[in-house]
Image (cartoon, rainbow, N blue to C red):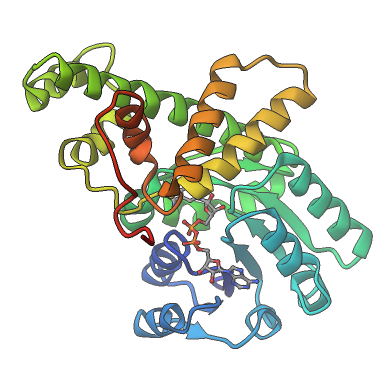
Length: 305
Ligand code: NAD
């Protein structure tokens, strides 16, 4: 079988390194995104930048979208000059952005209604920018099993844990649960950091021993440096986690699941954003705990005075 030709839409923090991993794996990649410097980066990596979604999609076997949120995914997929308007019959559209499960279901229904044989998968990821760069993402996939199988080699060029979770929207439901666990975990770590510091315990030593016990987590592993140095360069922005907490609270409510800690975490993420920290890494939830504990005054680093 010839190597599938890829159209990649959305070359941000995640999309750029992911598209580059496909290039390294031998896939031809045409890409489109809004920032000229990201298009230049794709060209430097051996890809072909394009001026529009339509141009990227023309001649592609697989279209991948890695966009900020639901409105951008809907516009790029369903717009007059979007993916469904230009994709060839039989194209596989894989949305790897994090959006609401109902958006993924709606997208699959719209593709089916268009009647041109465009297949759709939702395939959000976890693992952050470092996971994208290293090609070790967790990929949670919703849609038909045969489409999942068709995309298998592509997924394996991007991640190491690739799981078919069920029908359309299932990948996004699992991702919403992921974001719930991550937010609560970061908040708990941040509270532990402030508690330990106020108690006068050696913080690096404390985090090292916590890491090895039942309190250890990938969050603690990956965010330890941010906590210790107060470097909140994103990473994963609080603005995006705010969007994801909206998704999980709404999706849980829709199925009658009570997620009280999720509600609290959603409020704390929203508060961080309201305090001007939306552009910081989500480990900056620590700043919220510091504020509550009387440790921080002033605005976020880089925030307008
Ligand atoms: P980002 O803001 O860095 O990148 C988004 C890209 O989409 C930008 O390059 C932008 O130009 C492009 N874009 C927006 N509208 C467009 C349009 N109409 N046409 C073409 N391109 C358009 O975001 P990111 O951090 O790469 O995240 C992308 C998605 O992945 C989000 O849904 C996010 O929640 C999810 N995610 C992010 C991380 C992370 O650590 N950053 C981890 C897991 C999942």
